[in-house]
Length: 528
Image (cartoon, rainbow, N blue to C red):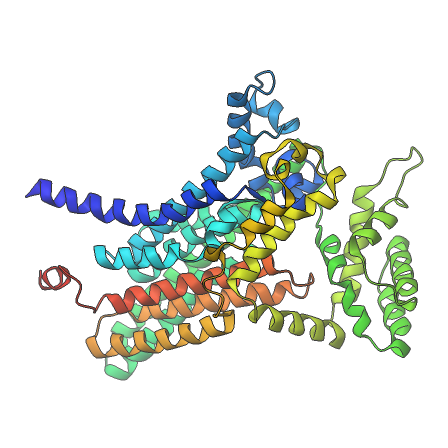
């Protein structure tokens, strides 16, 4: 009997894992590793500096070097070196890139299996959810791509799973779950700065769960005031723990970044102004007659003379109706920030950009609101295939910009004919969800949500906390993308948090619905 139980347990793990691995194995065999253009090159080749610590969050820039180093050692491409030396002088090899991409795929399988196992314990439900997850090229295309969004995506799956377990166990949450969630949240923040918004996920969820339960109890038994007060007190303590977990993760991530800056002899500062340069095209929406006045008003808020000079240069650029090229603007003006010895003063440049960005951003003008809303509307019309195709476009970036990614010349992805990359982008797997945009997925999500609420009330399954968590998960994903539109012009990759959390929340709702479906063996477990 014990052997049969062990076999069933192994099958419940192995069968979904095999399904989750199939798309990865096909991608590894049929599609060369993808690259997130020059950003991925900076993250995997540059030593620890302002770009790999402050501009690109540091976790991927550090962790990616481990498989790259192991691949380098096995390739025999050079003398064996220690990991510390390799981080400072990274050498890209085919075996190193393969080790990195394979590690990303394995981490994705682990994250997806962890997520599915928390959703349901039924084997057939797990198999269906594994098939649904494996059918989405969004996850696997990013796992096959070099770039920090990949690690962010994988950590988010772990984070969503841990958050689901905490919501399901409310209010009897064990310390281990809080620690795991805090560690994952800290890792997510260290992977992408915008992930700091995930700090609000659990506090909002737990607040709503406590509010709904207290209202339900107060309506059910108006005279049980002592029990209600006890429940509210306990809920307040749980909420405080959730808030402290989020704040602790944020503080730890910030402290780790400061530590890396100290080790690399880099002075910490925000790089939000540099990012905001990619949003400055919103100035085109300011009427011509008011544009100079708008920029002059922003300049009057600046204390640094360099920031005022940047705004004057902006006014000149937009007065000439030139096509806005943020990279060219940064390259042109960064040269002017040089000391007497001819060295570029990066810190001074960043602080000037930050002050300029603050002057233009706060308070948000109608032109900025209009640009952000239009970009967000465009984001909601995108499909998975649009985001996946974008990764092929960023990989193709190398062929027109070889000088900015010199080590990539020797890699398999770029040794093969350029047409082969374009052919790989047209694989049917990347396009079979084409008829469904984010908006249509949202409608499907809403229908599943209503179905789950109905089943929870009809069968008294107690899934109300899970449903509330799903709603907050969806809202947080949408909020991340919407706020991102205020700081940078929309790109398909920026929609990843919104699409990922939508798909994950749909899987949770399917798990709720499957719980009351009559799968083989399901009735026996329910009766026991």
